[in-house]
Every structure is written in structure tokens, then in C-alpha cells.
Image (cartoon, rainbow over all chains, first blue to last red; front, side):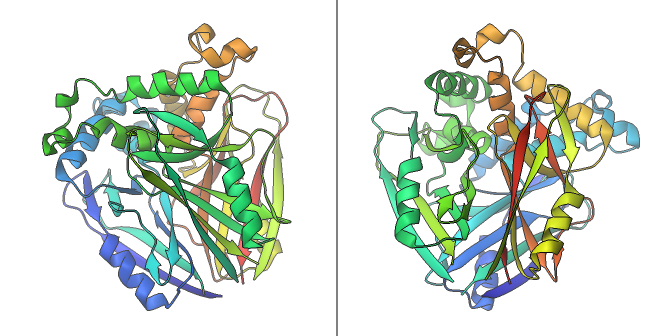
Length: 139
Length: 139
Length: 139
């Protein structure tokens, strides 16, 4: 069994953003030499997500609006977590909707994807250095 | 390490539906010959889900109603994604609630399930041919 | 390839609770002897979750309140599932928001975690014996 580990780093200048990381995951897979296996990609921070969906800016704007309706940032005092001095409780909630991680099949040395699948890092509390993890196992 | 890959195809006649695929995943596992490992099942389309829950029609009706409240289909013009000519933005949102994939343990050649776990394909934009992927690795 | 399987059991005295299981997963990993691989942790019941987030009681209170807003327990008659004699339809919904499972990378014999990641069992229909599964594969 082979394994490969890689970190991606982000420093998103806004509080929230979606970053397409598909090419970086493909590059890691190539480096790994794995032909058949599984590829885990997860946010290493608990106010961020990794998810698979469409690379379409209108949809990303829809996600932004929808997540803000389901778990609004303001008023920050509505959340007990923010009594710790944070203002990011909403980011912990949004991340649960969008998910921490994806697991992608590796077949014949490629990410085994449907026609529109792309991997995104979802930042909900940016403006500082954060990381995602790629772990690949297989043969 | 052994690996096995299989696609399931769906052509659901309605916009939304839940399809029990447990037996198909069990059949794929049997074919794989894997006794100890992991089984990934994921939607290959970004307006569909694979999830594990109860095989109970009342609950499925509850999911349908609840998802429609959280991410309504109408009015379609409320979503920027639908300006691309699509009317399925809500399906991309619903899929994030229900999830893209499940990873199931394989133990002694069986899906290692609790008493009520069943695997479902969740369609949120049907009436066309779509696919799910089964990837099994182990020994 | 090595594999290791372990069950955790819970008997939460309240309907809902979050239980930190990080140390139990670390102990299972140590027993497994796996140095590089993947660790799946999933609820074996469909009214419970396993998820990764912050070990902060204010945040857990925020999750409790937020999930109750998104999928209220009362009135129980609003859910068709509860016509089966159950009163736990809301628990099946809450579990979809928080997720069934996590997959964690194993690197150099440790759970490969970011600075604040902790694993929780989320109970949404407690007061009876329930289980979670740990499955570790790798080398």
C-alpha cells in the first residue's frame, strides 16, 4: 500500500470565499503514484469546509446567501460561542452544512469524477492562514 | 490490496426521489471479494446525494418537505445559478444537506451496518440519466 | 494491509447530547498498529451523528439551539415518520445536518488533525443503548 500526504494553505482576504482546489488535488494524486485507491481531502480547521459541487459563480453566490440565511453572522451576540471572544460561531455552523471532507475514488490514476464534479475549499472565517489536508492511500 | 469499481445508473421519472440502493452495494461488495476494507458510494452528479438513513416512507416524505422548506425550488428566479438557463439551483443546495457520499466499513465480507442503516440515492433533479459510483478497497 | 474494528457504546441519559470520543478513537488507533491509512468513525444508528468540530460548550449549546430551529422536535405530529409510533423524526433530520461519519487521515501513527479538531458523537434520540463504529485500515 502506498500513501501520500500533502497540505494546502490558504489566506483568503475576505471572511468567506470558495476556492477551487481540484487541480491541486490532481497534482497531489499524480505525485502519489497511486492508481487505485481513495483520496481524502479535509479542512484542518473547524470553520472551513471541503466539498464537491459546481464551478459556477452564480451558484457560489447562492450558497453564500443561503448559508447566511441558515446561520447568520449577525448579530454575533446571538451565539454563546462568541462569548469566548470569537465572532465566528456562524462559521462553525455553516461548515456543518457544507461538510468537513470529501472522499474521492481513484481509478486508473485519476480522480474518478462525474461530469461536473469539482473540489472546493469553503472558507467561513478567513483573513488568516488556514490549511486543508490531502491524504491518498492505495496502490 | 484489491479494488473494485462499479457504476449505478438512474433515470428517475420525477424531479425528486429517494432510491434504496443497499442491495446493489451489497452485490458489488460480493463481486469485489473484499473481506476487510472500505466502501465509498457517491453521487457522480452535483444535484444528487448518497446518504444512509431509514427505509421508511413517512420519513422520506418528511425529508422531502423539510428540504423544500430549507431550499425551495420556487421561485426559481431567486437563485443566480438559474440565470445560466438551469432551474435546479435548489437541487445543488439540497444535496449539501443530504451529502454527496457515504463511506461504509467492510468487515468479514459484509457492509458493517447498525440495525437500521440503509443506503439511498437522493435525486433532486431527475427526469434524466444519472449515475452513482461504488468504489471498494481492501483485502 | 492491516485492519481494526471497534465499537463504542453510549447510553446518554438525555434526548440530545454531544460526547467527545477523540481519546477513544486515539486508543483504537494505537491498538490497530496502523501508521499510514484512514480511520472511519460512524454512528451505527440513524438518529445520531459523528462529526468533527470544537470542544467548546458554548458552541455545543449553539448547535443544540440551531438544530432545534432547523428541525424542531415539537410538535411531533408535524412529521409523518412519527405516525409509526416514534417521536424521533426530528432526530433523523438533525443527523443529516451534522453527518453520519468522519474519515480521518492517519499519519505516522496519529490522527492527522488540525489544531482544534475533536471527534464528537452527536446523540439526537438518547436514553437507550446505541453504538458507533471505528474502522481503521492501512499499514
